[in-house]
View 1 (cartoon, rainbow, N blue to C red):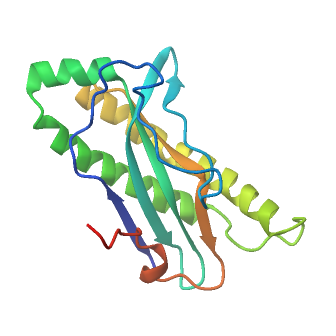
View 2: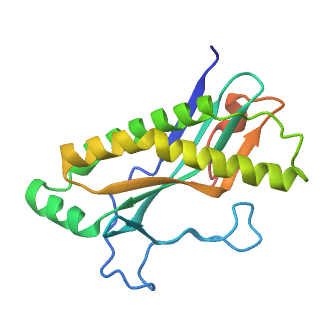
Length: 190
């Protein structure tokens, strides 16, 4: 089978805000008229814990030569866990965590794409509705595919995290998918 998978993330250590007040919370600089839509939430509730956005990852997968998807994936973590791990194990441990997180995210994305029907929906009222349905379906499939790996990661590392697909950023390809289409966009000025 034809499979092409790319996932990238910033390689800087996980930032720790001074406080979790809204003015210091991590955000993406996105204007309302940008293609990805509104700014993602700075926090996420997982069980009884409030997790903070600590990393933004871009990824894409070609399911076959015609179909695929790319988008932004948000990594949330418990800031108290981060501080505890920094104190107990030092900051170098986060490089190892980053690699594990990218691997489990890549696997979850591949699984989600493989399990999602990316064919055009003949019953949708338009392209926007079809994209929204696909984004919702892929987001659910990604979450389901990542759940077991996230539980295992937390057991191994004692760091509580969650990874979500940022649905406004998802782009689907139904008439051709290639490396050039799913590669994360780069800033030519850097």
